[in-house]
Length: 253
Image (cartoon, rainbow, N blue to C red; front, side, top):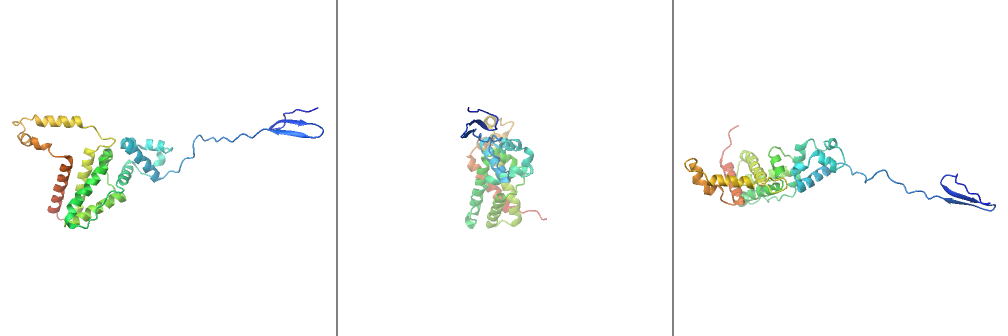
């Protein structure tokens, strides 16, 4: 008589007779990983900056917190400080990323040094204006990334090309970058830019309604206080600064 047994591990049954034994094996189940997601990519400074840059471009700098970055990279916030010492260093790195590819003038035409200088500062302002929250942060930073140093070097070269003495040029670069960064912070249009339309309307109304008996100088200049396009005013401001840098001696040290 056939004998049916289930006492052998991993066997469904054993059929035995005088001539042959037939063994039916239970298929081994496919192994199931305990991970519910792929292995994490290794952390790196470049990877951290890339994620921060994406968040800043899509949602604004204020969203690129260490906690948010850690969540995006599937790690703890403390792990990120191996790659950036603090938020200031992160913002400095982001500035250098957006300056990558900033067009630099040849700087070899003395007849164009002033126009090239204004155009370069305009390109810097335009790039930074897409991230006004970062522009406000940069006003308080001391950037030192390779692309920022390349920008300083180009500005110095153009000032020297125009005959500006070394010390005036060195001091002037700081002034020019302050003005350009402040313009980006004030007039930025990217994520994080405040809606200042209501405040601008209030200011315009206040100036228009001012009484000449109380504020005679504003009353005289009221038509010009808001005249000109933004581009015209920015180029004029840079021209005035450059002329002042070129003509104003620095104190003796």
